[in-house]
Structures are given as structure tokens and as C-alpha cells.
Length: 372
Image (cartoon, rainbow, N blue to C red; front, side, top):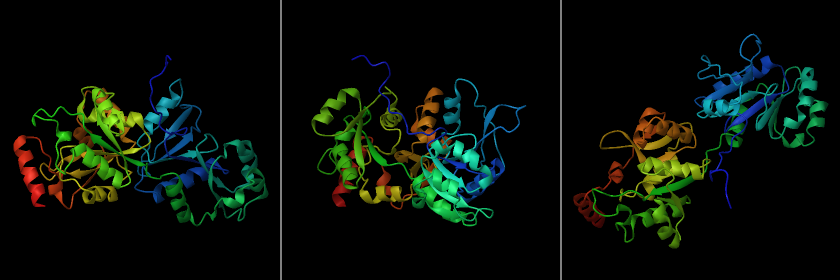
């Protein structure tokens, strides 16, 4: 059957971004103040405040981005590309707080303010996932109109405005949860210097791609083999899950991009097949130090001090950045990490990061593994 559109998975996004919450039920001034308080409390997360323009002589709508509680930028949302403008501008945000008097969001926080009862009733259909109800100095218990709008209100946390700290774990645990982790084992390289296919070399009694696949599986991480199109049948006949290259002749970055095209909502633990000393200890070390606030978490190379992009966890927010680099003519994953906000960590056993590219290095690695 003819398909009009490419078989691409869409990321789970709200009206503004992957993680978003609308503050509703009070004045725009009170909502903006709450947004500032939450921005400070959630630091160092990159929090953005989305609000309508309250000065009609200027642009109609804009996003106010608070990077450090002092600086902001305005982004026009008018025109046919509104959804593109919003998501492109906010792709690197960790949370977008929305003025619910003007915009919808996937999650909501309600402020108790009887003077805004009519406004909240008007937006009752937008209360799809209320995280908390906040009582205030002027309204110290949940008013009857909120109980009427939300029949299940007793199942929603009710917090006092003086206890903002109680709201932070709710936001982190229900909105800002880390993306699920999957493993991408790179097998599509041509192995020119080695003279043989590196993923098929036996370091541990089996092909290295099989060793890494089973290692990840034992760690509870769903593994996939990144491969060229002509390799998929061979691997899948043996029971391996694969992701075929969609970006041809682009090396590892093409494989990483193809993984995000397959599942843009996952974080990808990317592993090269030419690092025979990798084990669950060093991979768990990387996972423990994972930072979802960054583009990726990568080990620092002990050989040149640069990040190791092929022993790294790439977060969903990296996808749009990778595509931007490709659009500018760059296909080096290390350059992506160097030029963006990657979280670089030092390995406690850096010798396990040594890769093998030549026959002489292969012989040395085999001898070292025999001794260990």
C-alpha cells in the first residue's frame, strides 16, 4: 500500500515542549511570580516561562525565556509556523511553565483564587492532569468551585503556598522523569584499518556485537544493533533487534540519528564495537552519572581528553541538535558533544575505554584479556 508520509516516529510533545505545566486559577501577575519561584527552585534545570504579550502595541504572542532569572528573549509565535517556532525554540528546555490564563499545557497546577473562579471554570476542559492544588493566604482551603470542577480533587495533592519545596519533587517525579534508556551497538563500520569486520571479532568467546548485546540485556537495557541495510537480515535471522541506517554514509552519527528516528522518546546508550574491555561495571558507572539536563553524558577520553561519543548516553534533546549539525555539514559525533552542553565524566578505570583499530592493537588486546 502506498504511504504518503515517511515511517517516522513522532516525539511525545505537548503544546510547547516535552515537559510542560500550566499554572492556572489566579492572576497573570501571581502566575508569573510562581513561575519565577519554581525556576529558581528547579535550578540548574533550564526552565522557560511561556506567556502571552500583555502589550498589544508589540508582537501579539511571545515566549519569555528565563535562563538565569535575569535574561529573557522574545519569540514571535504568529504565522503558519507557530508549532515549529515553539518546539524549535524550546527543544533544549527541561521544563516549560505556561501561563494557563492564555495557553494550554499537558499538566496543570491550580492556584486557589476565588476572584478568578470564572476564568478557571472557562478552562475546566483543560484540567486534564492536575499535579497539585495550591492554597493561598487569601484562600486557605480548597474552595467549592474547584471541588465542583474537579470531582476527583481528593486524589490531588493540596499544598500551601508557603511550602513550595513540596511541589518540586512532584514536578520532577511526574514531569521531568528521565527518558527510558535503550542501547545502540554500532556494527555498520567498514573496518578499513583493521582489515576485518571489527564487530565480529571474538574477544570473549563470541562476536563482540553479540557480547555487548547480551551484556546490555543482562543489565536490563533493551539493546539494538545499528547496521547497514544489507546487514539487517543476517542479524535478525539470529534473533537480534536491529536499527538500519537511514542516513547513509554518515558513519556513527548516522546510526545515532537513525536510532532517534526509530524512537525519539528514548535516551540511547551508544556503544562502539571496537572497545573490547567494556564491562557492566564501567557502563553502570556511566549510567550512575547520567545527567538528563545535558545533551549527553560521556566519558572523557584518557588519551586525548575529549569526550567519547561512542561510549555515551545521548538524551532525547540531542536529536534536534544532531540534525542542526548535519544541516551545517558536520557528521562528527565528537564535535557535537564538544560544541554542546554535554556532561563529561572521568572513568575510574580509563583503561577499559581503549579501542582497537589495527591488527597489532588487536593482538595486544587479546593477550591482555587472557591475562585478566
